[in-house]
Image (tube, rainbow, N blue to C red; front, side, top):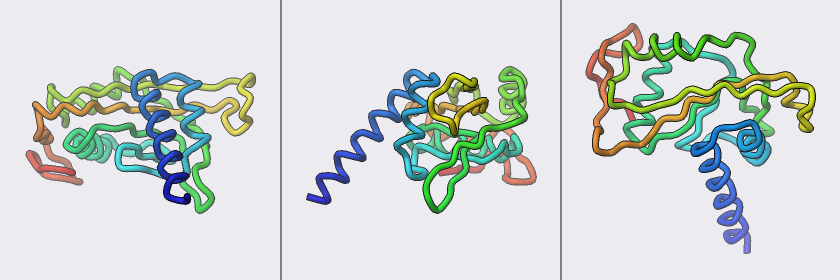
Length: 160
């Protein structure tokens, strides 16, 4: 009975993840956050933005496995996920330009800003913004390697 319940919960989470992956909007993201308890292989949360070389490393690792979503503005706690939002939002074009120094052209990803105002019914999301980075899984191009190194990794290093 307990295994069936777990399987049903996981199926629901996977469906919500797929909705965000296919259509990253406020409703789908809110529903995903409400039902998650932590990270999964294809879903990673960061409390705040990280340096671009480190972000590139995470994106490369996700692209070399199954793709996935990185989200800025969510804190993992012992009681689950806490949406805290981010205060600094870089321009998406600038973010892609800075990441482009490290990521191969064939690696497909999109960056979305999800923002909530006063009217959202879940108070934890009121007036908060989040950055979602959706990384496609494209096995025909694997292995993705960084175009240049940084203090965090060497050029042409493989990440999983």
